[in-house]
Image 1 (spheres, rainbow, N blue to C red):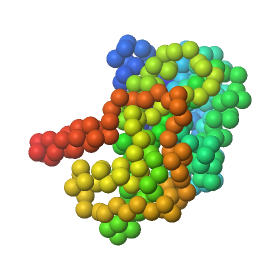
Image 2: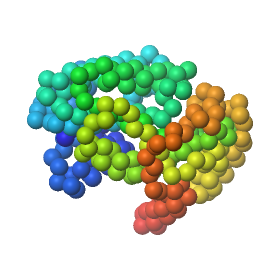
Image 3: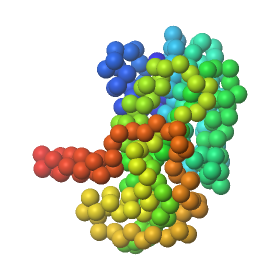
Image 4: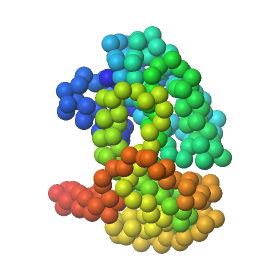
Length: 256
């Protein structure tokens, strides 16, 4: 197997879990000599591969740059896979991509999905909700002064560890030639999730619910950031993850 983005948050967990099951895995990234934009190292990385999992994210959210990244990377990876005889292409995408096309990032993800569907390689597209680990980034983007202004629209994030477990199962299964949605076990208002995160981390910023605040500049509603009825749900609740992550930080600080 080859995991593109194998050194990132999700990719590193996926590589570890696959190796624990004694699968031979190549963690492909620029740090291992594989460049999906120039094509350098692609053929060598894919030699003998049967399954590819692409969890790479764009380094830029600029509309033009992100579209060029996902289109160029997608074409290069799929062409190299076709030459190598890859039997299953698994790609990580985002729940709500088709509902958030006012964003250049989501238009780029849709372009990536369309390239995969148009290829001759059997595939599974995994659309996941946002990770618990990214809630701090949402707060940072939405902060002005000491106030975090956020939409109260429903949000159903998932623990990165749970998503990696699902990706392992999907990578080892037959291609569905379609899409699977993955989310956390519970939906909650976006503003409340950030409020709980800040409180758990003793962050004194104040969260204000504002229906006009949107999500990274986009207007959202209760359907924008939540999955459909048939999504696979991870087991870890947000409050459980908060307790684990804050206790881990406290222990690390004490040890330091």
